[in-house]
Length: 261
Length: 253
Image 1: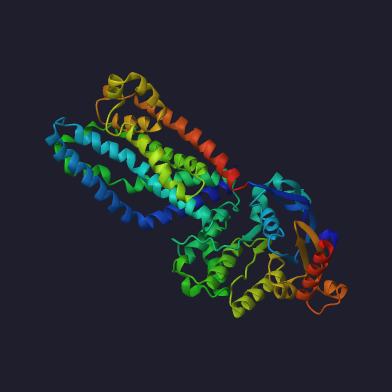
Image 2: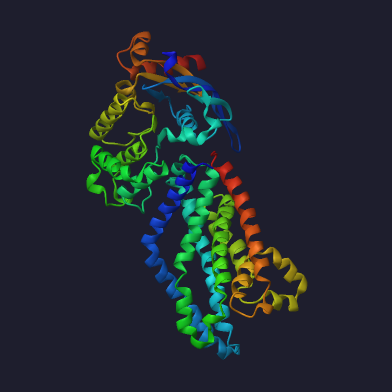
């Protein structure tokens, strides 16, 4: 990759950042409404159902922080496929002095930027709602920042992967109900892997094939007691492996589908 | 004239492997494009015009064959080749969330135009295409004619040596078409080589140094408009085209 290719890559990224920054406030408001609703229920209503663990609010907060980018995948898929089927802005980018594969890599990074920036308000809002039950000093900030970035980059490549298999926009509802929902709900959003292992070890081992388990375990282990979660660096390693795998397959299939170089 | 050859298309084929049938869009197209000329690609729908221009713009690869730029295969260094190409697509694929000025700014950055020159270049092009009033407007509010002008302005941001225009005047009002014709003529005067795909035969006749008529994926004819009119004893290119279609129909019968 020569210097000019880098310039084109970063110009594309800069373009996407400029576009998102115009929408940042709107997306932050969306995020605010969502996280406020979820954490209020988790912190103040769930104890009435017998969930009395004081860490439950933090557990839910970090689960939602990790999963925000996953829900952004729906929007990213719709925008990507809508463009392929409609205006084809992508065909302009594919004619630029940059290999097609890097156009898709840029798309994944831009997607990561969007979900990171729009979810930045989750922690402060969570602290305000949860109060003293969420102790900021318990966060391993170094690990948390790494997890936050890697998780969202993973979502970017996962989007490319999913799009590459989708025939058209109409199949989005099928992808949501058959792929995205089970991945999320069985991916440890409301339980830890250790809990699942105690109940059904075989299913727990099968569940290790679900990348969302590493997302949830990884981010929660940066703030909650480590012994309750899968090792942090293993989770990050697996997310890198999944990112490379999904990115490779997705880029290869999209390059073929769009018949580009 | 052979010393002025800028691009050589060598036996290019393109096959689309679609279900239920395979489509051979180009069946061994070979032609030379000369420095500074305007070459128009003509043909009925499905003749292979857009496929050929997409391959020359390097947007899509050929199934077989090669394209030589100044004697070297473009596929040896595609990135360098793309720097000298300006591709203006048929569909107005504008970033609708960006303003016109921002769109042009990034179009310059993609091609590594120095930042201090981009603003001036964008201003010149917006002025040339009457886009200055829309500089701060989003691309989504532009009418069809202005979108087309914008696409051409964007194509020219990095001052390409070869400009590929795919049906640039489709659906435009006559006066806007004329305006774009003037711009295309100006580009030629500046030494830019232009490959024009069009359905409008008056446009091809007015603008082209040579026209290339494609039919069912092969080159039917390639010559100057004057020669074609003389050979077919017609007073305009439209009549030449109709004569050719009649010939084809007779052969098919």
